[in-house]
Image (tube, rainbow, N blue to C red; front, side, top):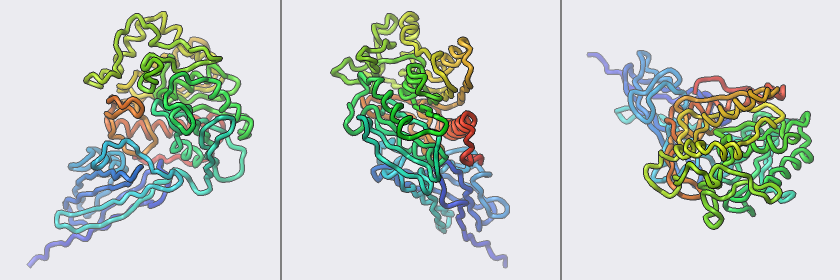
Length: 446
């Protein structure tokens, strides 16, 4: 009589602890050949919201499933992806889009569970940290500034990166903490929707950002005087604008999904001060010309809640048809006095960041920009290019200020590849222009 093999699954993770940008090897062994096993991932993220994913795999002839080698046969993602169970997660019983932990200095724990059809289970936990051991966090409230400073472990001086958020406002602590973990002193500066600041982006004075740059140079003593500005979306527009306006203060610009022109306040605008068409940036109390300032080609905007929200990006193509206004609103990027990194998604449906990035690169080329210009343009990626190995499933969402629904674009898989590729590309860019090489990149497939 032949004894039927008995499944005894073992779930192993290499390594259990690490930074959030480090992929792990996840293996289920002890299975019967060709056996099906369902593997799920459960993570508690901001505000106690649980995010989950699940995928089913078929064991090989040795009774092993290796997520870095094997594609699922069903589930929440459909390709070989070592960390697919993380980036395919969705919030449970919630519409939350908050991907990170409430306390950025504490790692996020993910519980992985492998379960066979017979109900035999195995569990393991992995931890994703934003702050490496020795990274220090300090709230900054000097000179009217509202931000958070993250300092790397080990003696300085360190190159400095100022980190700016987009139209959601607030202080981008996750990106700054991870930059500090990779050897850069990171100053996450809020400019609206942060303690003591306006809840809206409307009429933000560039002098406030100038004060932040001067504070960083004076107080942080950056290595070789290097202070880069990194921003995403409206922050990407702002990063280019700061480099063009204060070239003596900005050593390099890193612009994620940026605008090439100044826009009005849009979805982050104060309804009492012009709303969508209100002024975003001022200098010396004077509003900067922007694309929605009596635009002759546009008589509508997509933030009034009309369906479908996927039409949002169309208004920007219409806006550029007013060529005279677009020329006045164009950011004079030729004034930037340092290297420029542009990061975009080809399926950006919030605004055309791929086109905008190409416009910036073209302007720099036409003006014989003598510094490095690099454009990373990702297939199947939308507007929400984020840190690596986080959920990339929140394609349609409510704007955090206006609460109007809109679509970022891209696919979860494409967005995840852009998350990882942009992060690695940014670190390579910073290392190249600073000569830092202060960290080890994670090159494994995620």
